[in-house]
Image (cartoon, rainbow, N blue to C red; front, side, top):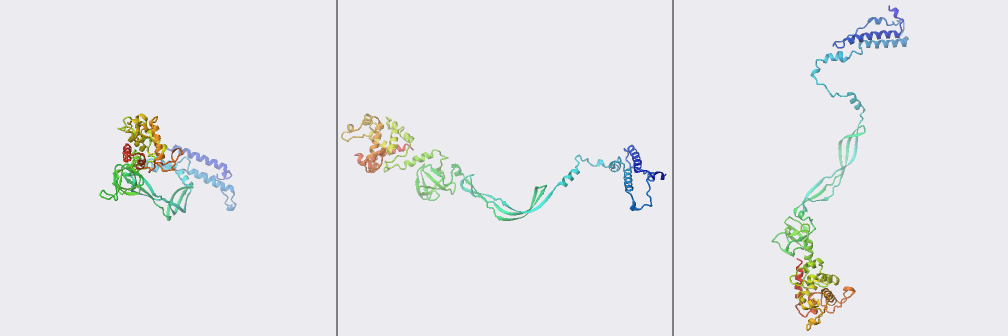
Amino acid sequence: MLDNHDNRNLSDVFKELQEIQQTQTANTSKNKNKFHKFKPRINFAFRSRIPRINSSYKNSDLKLSHIIIGCGVLIVGLAVFFPKNTSFTQSYAKEETVEKISEYELNRHRLNMQSIISENTDMDRVKEQATEEREVEFKTEYNNNPSLPKGEEIITQDGIVGKENVTVIKTYENGNFIEETILSKESIIQPTSKLIDVGTSEFLAKHKIHIGDTMYFIDNANLKKEAGDDKEDVAEIKKYLDVKLLELPNEEWCKVSFDTVEGYIKTSNLTSSYTTPNIIDKNRIQKLLIKVNIDMELNKASGLTLNDYKKIFTGLPKDTNKIFQDNYTAFYNAEKKYNINGIFLASIAIHESGWGTSQIANDKKNLFGYGSYDATPYESSFEFEDYSEGIYTVAKSLVKYYLNPSGTKIYDGETAAAWYYNGPSLKGVNTRYASDPEWHLKVYSYMETLYNKLQ
């Protein structure tokens, strides 16, 4: 029988192998729910059907067709021993693990190993060593400063960034920087710390001031040579006058300067424009008042404002006819126009008219007795249309003849004649203006009364 199949071609052999495989597959399907090892049977008759190789052939004489037939037989044999429907999991693994599977928890989030392997296979990780010049940040230091308002900060020294050489190993993945490891550092320039002073003075914070600012006396007081009530006095300072704050050795005493005099004063006797808003105006008035004296120059404006004049001449007890209250603007305008102290001018009017009650004042609107002679005062006095006309006339006469040296430029392009000039003071005017030698003292007393209305 073997000889009957010697002349079969390769196609016939594959058909027979396919029939055998189909038979084995059918038998496997019938027993797929049974847990046993499948032992495929080999039909040895099949071997008898494979064409024999002529022993007379040499190895070198093997034809390509014989090699192809041999490979095909090998493939068919493997398929027979391992049918495609016979699962390893069903026939082997399942049999070994079926009794132990309850001992393990099912992994509900199984890893996708293929994805992990793919991602890591594609990852390009590179490490490189480098030496770089880098900046070194400076530190910030804070220092308490009792000469600054509490909570305030000032920079006393700017910080400067340093430099250093740094050797590192850098790691990159897919071209992206991941991390670095520092191997060494070498300083090039040391950084300079930033210094900040932090104020601690509650006194300065209360008054919103700093060292070097202006402060004001709230009462008359003496400057001391040193800090302490029992120390030597160096100057007396009137209230409202301003001083410059120089030092703050502690919260109780401070060092100040008044003009060219330096000394110590208790902080409790000082205030600021922040704490006492109207102190600046009081300071202005006080500076004017300290210049008021019997020898003061009268050929200069007083420095008072129109509101100051209103305050001075409103409510004067002896101005019963309110003549001065109603004409305070005339005295102010005469001062501005003719450069004469308006308070001095008003004080002459008060003295000469008895506060505006004299007959000449009432009948002739002449508050000064201007033009009068001792023998015939009423008849020789000038008469004016209103009080302001008499005020301006007397102001011009005093400026031109009594208060300025000859040739001094005065109002309206004129120059002073100085016929009766004996100095710009009250005593100098008294010499030729009034026969009463005490006239200047009496006029000055009225000036003090008017100026004191400002306090």
